[in-house]
Amino acid sequence: MTSRSKTLDTLRQKLQRDSGTPLPSVQDVAGVRFEGEMSLDEQDAVAHAIAGMYGQDPSSVKDMRAQPHSGYRAVHVWLRLPARVEVQVRTHMQGAWANVYEAAADVFGRDIRYRVRPDDPVQRNIVDSLQSLSVVATAKMEEERNSKARELLRLQEYADAGSPIFDKQVRDRLEAEWKRGRTSENEFRDALRKLHDQFRTMQGGPVTVSGFVIEYYRPTGVHRVHEFPGAEGYRDAMRYRLQLEGERTDSDWEIVSLNSSSLEALKSTHSRYFAVEDERQSA
Image (cartoon, rainbow, N blue to C red; front, side, top):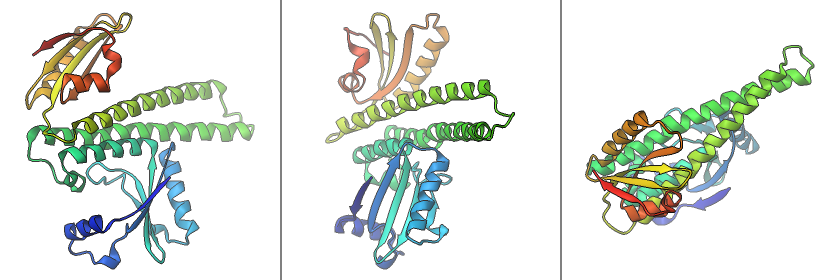
């Protein structure tokens, strides 16, 4: 859990962006962030519990998952106390994505948080892809988690009641699926953390991004790197990765496509692929 109050500069910028909002109506003069590993149902429960704790009407809970703002998904609680306070309730997945997008905003401009797309086509494609990571990939994983959590809860209720509907084999299957889902979530969060670090390395200079495809042989660490420079590099890299995957006959070969400002930055953010000397091929 973290908290902050707006500085005079950020408050001034907010009023300038939305000149129709008077100062007394600014909701997030002070803010608190509650973030944890939880399902969508648990996120709702936490938000409504916070609202009830402070005697707030259910309308104070603002669901930003159905209609994300520039990809941002969360549930906010607007507390009308002596001072207006906004409580941001985020799942661990939503928080990981938000950290990446904040880092990207420091590179591409803070306005990308307010539905402004960069003029540069490469940067615009990256921002669009980041938003898709939230509203498509992350949302799907969270919906699957929520569905499995509901099924497991329902089975536990049957078991506690001694109901003949309870089936241990079904529960074992659901628990195995649950564990696989958590593994996928952890891998996804690791990828987001690496992406966050990559954006941090881009700060302080002009941004040029290339697409890369890495062919990595797990048993030995041998790998080949293919670079695709230019505005369409990330698309070319994705197409080439799909081509290689279609041709792959040995599952020990891992094939990934990545975007990076340079090979050196890629080696820093994805060091596990570079334990031995690489074979670099520019497309």
